[in-house]
Length: 464
Image (cartoon, rainbow, N blue to C red; front, side):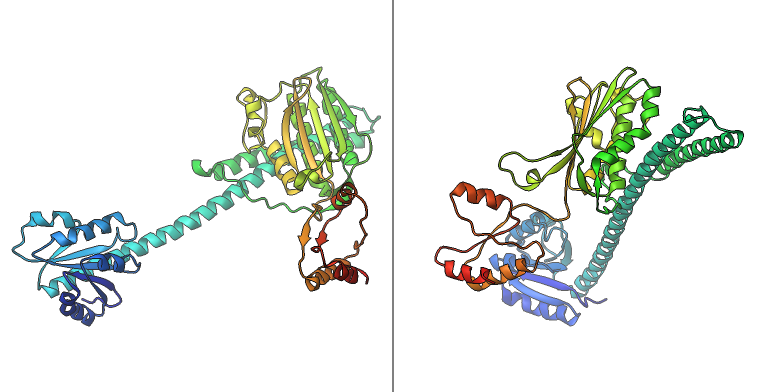
């Protein structure tokens, strides 16, 4: 029996009445703080860290009732163990206002020490168990998040790989059917093997996708967890027009087989800094989606263009963008569903019989977001769907204007020294009206301004 390491709050009618019992508790190894049953007790117990409170009630419990009520109402003390030392002659009914408390007869210090030791040991064990449970819950949560990411990546992989298998099978089928010219027996044998391997691969991917879904089943509250993507963007300069045109060529045969006409419009090359392979994946997924929902006799129109912001703009809207628009003559997407179609696994009720897992457009938005762009669905003039992707032409460095007000010539000199060290450093004296100055400022990455009266210092630091 020991109270070693425990911190107790001892409350009596007045502080002097606490001292004998406090000394006995300290002898058992407890740290004891004392207070009279008035505002000083509440002030003392407002500080966290007490393991238990001991109320020296005696034969007068009424002064302690407000304090006990405060224990129950304050989240900091609600779980704290409370012991009441009461006179043996005190009727139990008078203790009702103190509940819940552990009652010990006054003067029975051994009983108090034993009971306090047992209760606090149980409380510590319960607290440790709760802490372990919280740790396990946190680890489980992290595992579920990682599992969600694995499930997401498996969905993306199976979707995109099956699309590529379809492209391989389509071109191999063209060769087999003589659309690219006659084949000899050896060539026909090779084509047959290619077709068989493509079909077998697609079947394996289908089984893998089903197994991934079955073995990564998530709780209902984890279904909407957005996994952190493992993709990285490798930025190179490429022509979005050429990437889109070459990707469309992969689906020409599929479009012809479905009696869907395609049209491509690109007024001029559009140079874009980004991951060409991932952007090709964006184009592929949007085209597959359009082909899936465009009926026979329909039309798909693809437009690629550069967009320059008009008028004053800032942030994302101020950048030059590449815009990819794919317009189909399918059934369209209801306005209330146009955001949901970009969620993983989201499918319209009417599309239950259309093959798919609701992954393609989700991948589009993820890749576009990593490139600093945006993707949205709109109603096409034909009544079908227009899927619009906007990508900044260059995300390697931000080009929003920034104005730095410097009130110290020395600090301004250091700022300009940093700017001068950059290869693109230029300086220009602005003369003219406010309009010409504003036009010049809009093209700058940074503008350093010194307050009026510091012109000589500014001339000096720019003269180098």
